[in-house]
Length: 603
Ligand SMILES: Nc1ncnc2c1ncn2[C@@H]1O[C@H](COP(=O)(O)OP(=O)(O)O)[C@@H](O)[C@H]1O
Ligand SMILES: O=C(CO)[C@@H](O)[C@H](O)COP(=O)(O)O
Image (cartoon, rainbow, N blue to C red; front, side, top):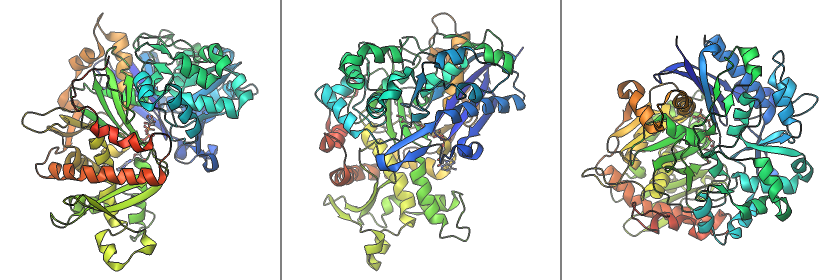
């Protein structure tokens, strides 16, 4: 009898669910698109905003609706839930859900004849606050300054927790929630991350936070393997340490140990077997690295709403310029991550500007954007001596670097190492128009800019590839943007990749797939078999991945290397003009000038 393992991904714009068989082959997949399916919540691109305070958040009720809907869709496709042996999942990182004092009782007593929404957001609410702060939120600069200051420096905070303070990280967010909504904070019995919220629904009680995802909070001491007392005191107020620890709960060390069996609600309502195991749900990025048997110097670029760059490494080399987190399945491994807020939506802005000039001005297709990006020469140079076009395109405040929203366009002369600002469109003359036609030149420039930033910050973590200079061995593209051939081409041109640029050829969602693999590993692995060995054994290279673009191109990769210095300077100018937070002048430099020896271990 076939048996299935389910993986979910609750991300910014969708909830996706997929089922794999024991050989890890994809069997079923379904999704709920929040804007298309649940527009009644008034969301746009999955979220609500309060621009006056830089707040971005999502209604928890919408996610409850989405869970019922995605299960219905999986059922309609023919998935027999009684054959599901294990469930895991992932949630967008950093977001918190605040459970009320009634939350756990309501979860435990769910009536299979009613929907989740009716019962958890009904007469009594399971939540002390109806919204979950979203990772795009930028309202916590004051709290971030306090977090960076508490341990003395951004470097020290990064050393202890894996990251300097970030607006979206749960610690600063919880601190602000306590300050802004003291009554709701007092009425909060438990706090979940988005991942552990989703696990809680399936488990029928509040599930623990996962060992990988907990590193996205600025509250967890990675080396100690426990909550950091001083940072908890900062978020909670000095007298509230024990209270906040109780709200957050214990974090199990083993990311693969089952939490127990599925809630009776899903047994009765959807006919799951009562023995279906609920396996720790982790963050969407940690889960994504589980979808591939990553080797040294392999990199994943996730092109969702955010752009993230992910590597799996045994080295813990924290720095304020990026993030380190515990690997979600294997103790002793870490996930290296860069995360950009201006990913998919920033590219869409330029796509829409180009399409608005065409006959079908409302078109949402990428053809125009792709054709324009690939027909523009490398860095916009018409000859090897003409200046390079370097830009930053941030319609929303950015994380890397920490600057407010804005657009910067510069012409860079690599020989004299000088930058000339391109004036805004309304103040431009005809000559300048040809040096940077807007929006045409933006199509290539935004892709180059996004990949140059990744290259700049990851160059210390990649190794020589045979005779080729240090660069990724393979680049794997995942997320919505991975479907785009122009993006794949530019990823290879800028970042290299000795073997090329690849994408998963199994379904549309690496993150949910990674979760389903974890559920399968927990259910099927031999005693002591680690996650990597389990996946490697079942890996079918031809069936699972597909090469979609060349990587390293001699001459082109080196040309982008010449642009890095100018690009770093463009970021510095943006930081000077619109940077946020303490330490803004250091933010960039540290990424390139610090130790260049990738073998150095910090203990
Ligand atoms: N063909 C395409 N080319 C470029 N970007 C695309 C394409 N298809 C989808 N996208 C982008 O993918 C994004 C959604 O990606 P997805 O990984 O599903 O998002 P999330 O996980 O953040 O909800 C959209 O914002 C869109 O910009
Ligand atoms: O904030 C981060 C990671 O630190 C984001 O990557 C979120 O985890 C959201 O991811 P997507 O919705 O873009 O997949």
